[in-house]
Image (cartoon, rainbow, N blue to C red; front, side, top):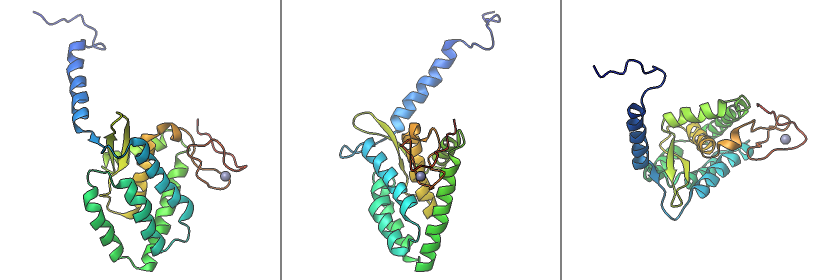
Length: 209
Ligand SMILES: [Zn+2]
């Protein structure tokens, strides 16, 4: 009888743990998306944050023209290195062809309200991470590595709706820069985005910790 019946159940032998852990690491290394050398995780992270911040801070009152400008000028560059970006040119054109001016304003308004709601909820501990992990599980972001070995997340442009595209930018930022989302990211006084900074106006930045 070779079964070691005296071994504590809470401490399994290392040999049963090591192989799965090693397999996971190998699978991850094989499947992580490699960014082209002309870019870096610094550049993709900055592009994602720039795109969602501009939308949140400037989109009040936007119509179709601004929506199209933002999509091609800020969203598309942030998503262009995604492995599924090839289809995006077509997807963007189709999206806007069928969108009339009133519908565009409504898309902007509902998206803005939804994104502001998510950002405000990040004041609660763990909410930013839970939000980002949910979108990651839905395939809204792609984990990638650059030539320097740095890891970050980029939005996947195969989102079904406009709101999903903006939320994917936020999720990519949360996963790439978790330290910037450890506390509240909105100023309580002016509702301004305070991500990556400690103070805004004279308003108190709610501290969730
Ligand atoms: Zn403020």
